[in-house]
Amino acid sequence: MEPVLGEYFGRRIDKNKYLVSTRCGTSLLLNEKDYRALNNGQYKNNKKLTDRLVESKVLLTKKGIKEFIYRLKVQYVQDKAVYMNCIVNLTHRCNLNCSYCHANAGTVDEKHMDMADETIEEYLDFIMNLPHKNITLEFQGGEPLLRFDKIKYLLEEFNNRKKKYNKELASATIVSNLTLMNKDIADYILKNKIRISSSLDGPKELHDFQRSDANGKGSYDHVIYWYNYFTKHNRIVGTMPTITKKSIEFGAKAIIDEYVRHGRNAIYLRSVNELGRVRKNKRLSPTKEEFTQFLIDAFDYCIYLLDKKNYLMAERNITAFVKNILFPVRQYMCMRRPCGAALTQVSVTPNGDIYPCDIARSIPALKIGNVKTSNFSEIILNTLDLRTLTQEVQPLCDTCAYNNFCGNCAVVTYAKYNSFIAKTPQDFDCYVNRHILDYIFNKMDDKKYKKYYEAVLKTEE
Image 1 (cartoon, one colour):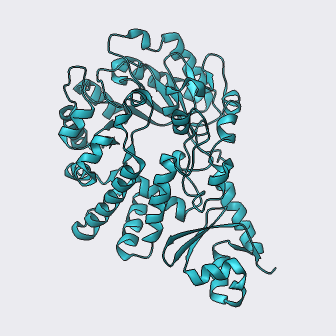
Image 2 (cartoon, one colour; image 1 turned 60 degrees about the horizontal axis):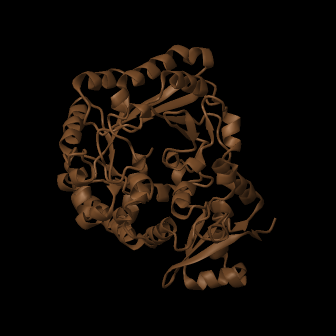
Image 3 (tube, helix red, strand yellow; image 1 turned 90 degrees about the vertical axis):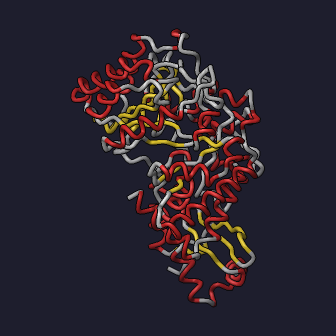
């Protein structure tokens, strides 16, 4: 069959550089002459251009249609082998008083914020009856080490029941501020191959400013001590910074250098969300222009480190975007369509309420069930509103050239606007994503940047 012109989207990203993308997530860069030829049909007289358009699925052949459908399928149809990440918040108490806490955690003394033993049993029943064979358990809070005895109980009971319910524990993770860590807990974590995650916001002054207890005592020294302890035992503590207005003052280089100093090769620079305590103190939030420039500065510094120092620092925003551009499968649930909430992750609060993802638990309107009364089919049905009002059905998103490479977070949108519908294109995430994708595509032909793209993708293999 003769190639047929399919649906495509265009965006000018430089003086003589245009991006063309398709619904299935393929793309190519054209100069102005070729872009005009595509738009007015003159591509038919240009075999080289026609071949490029066929390869990128802008022009569809019989073979191309099959590949087009395959790419859509792997994005929208969940593989049966996909795991379910089950986040459990055994308590909303915490011994720290972090300025941006999205959970708006209570104090150590507020024991009514703990999950009751009865609810723990109902939580176990709930996850054992999920349709997924592979389960990952993630313990959050509050501070989960306040209830370490219940973490051990949940893990041991899961292993006792897994054969009966045909389940496998793919992994277990504790997300902790590390201030309550001790040798006994650390040894249990090491013996049972539990993953450990924490926060490291940057240099000591910045970290302690943002992550301190009620008396103003910072947590940096605890994080670094236990980071080094686990490193010596061949276990990496996963760390990430939360970027606030104060972080912007320190700059991307200072924060990345802190991670380099501790031998890290990856960093995820995420902006603070307007949830929990930030809703009352929006001065913590950088503007969209500030955060965009911060990411660009970070990007350029990562390029410098690889080019001049032969040191790879994989920035996870960039890595996720590049993977979405080059590959059909969207693994990162917050940067894909459809959103992975409740499909690959659920979060359960101490009273047993189920939310579609971790940050959603700050918004009562997004509750999708309770472990005492709900099964998986019911909670999926309860996410219909969330799914029918997300990125792919919003007109400005649906016709954007970047619609297949980024993702609109319905939870963050709801927190900002009390609505699932983002105020694009002035929305924070929309603005940041457009400008960062412009930057990535604009550097696609630059040798230094291509070398970086190839290097970060290898870290994901």
